Image 1 (cartoon, rainbow, N blue to C red):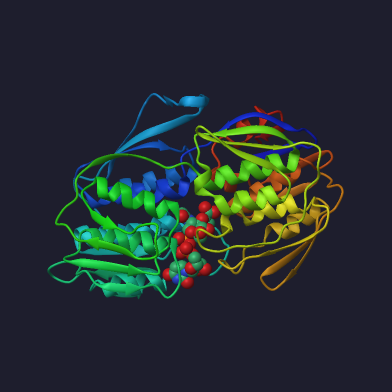
Image 2: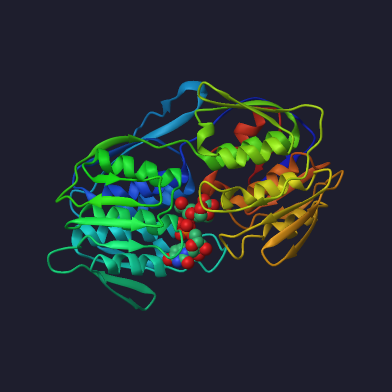
Length: 431
Ligand code: EPZ
């Protein structure tokens, strides 16, 4: 199993191309099930989760072709263009063996139900960061008239004889995935659906833009009320996946940690205002550029900053672990409160192995900055937790060896190459 070795101590200087967003690419790929025409997605990142979803969509009958030649992007980054054609849905069951590996694959429930009138989808798996129930999906789709029962670890959903029917539904809690699914299902429902307390994440807006390009009638995405006028069918489209704001924030924090001067390109500061503000307060300078941003920290140390995770536009839970990595070296005491997932602190004990001083009280971590970290063997526990160990490893004395890097491969494209090109000593060790 691969491991990643980081030798700490180098500043970062250079340019890092930001990939297309994993968390936009996945729902966009799933939206291809809504039409018998071809959906072409550009800027799709090459990640384990994307490959897994390709297998799942293939199982439902999608014909998928990846551009043989990698498309060379501005700034020396690579991205793929992928064509998805689901002329016929050959199977409306998403089996446990496939869905258990990645929670987002559960979202096929929406398009299958809307297009075929029925779906049988295994209850999901994914990163073990909390209980992650599916009640909001069930309530939302039931509001559109679906009959839903849980049987043997599967959700069996059936639409009324004439198809799903538009309705008004207000989520009792903000959920990105349930917003994606209800929005996709409502595109083919009869009449108007109004989703209240919808997730406002940029990835929801990206999905709505793509669905509209396919002929859907969606307004309000990006606000907490989304209105969808149902249409009878959707067509194909060509859509470019938006930049990965979590990857952007992760590298910005890596530079804030290691020091140096790096341009992050093919991205957009507007996608992560709150996180960038926290990084600035920690002592890094961030300036927008034509197609991204420049991050630098020279001389001054890292200041303690308190953050609380919240749905967008709040501080993203997907950057919480990385920010904690940064705070381990601050000059004082900081607090990080996690409000989205109840079990997203598994990086705490691994950071402690590097010498971090962190104590937990309920959903809040208290981090007492230390003057030095020391390399050690550590274990990746989930996707974002694993990259927080890489960030800490960039300044730890000696070698940090991160095992279970398959977590990293789910969401960070060519991580070691991107960091190495900026002067870090990061290498993958295969055994
Ligand atoms: C998405 O997960 C992201 N995944 C997550 O990123 C991200 O952490 C999360 O949104 C929050 O921003 C993808 O986009 C593929 P939620 P999702 O439904 O949709 C509760 C990463 O590292 N909830 O918004 O699964 C849930 O338990 C991943 O890339 C219910 O109670 O998250 C959580 O407490 C990890 N009932 C809260 O809502 C439900 O039916 C928000 O979860 C559904 C969710």
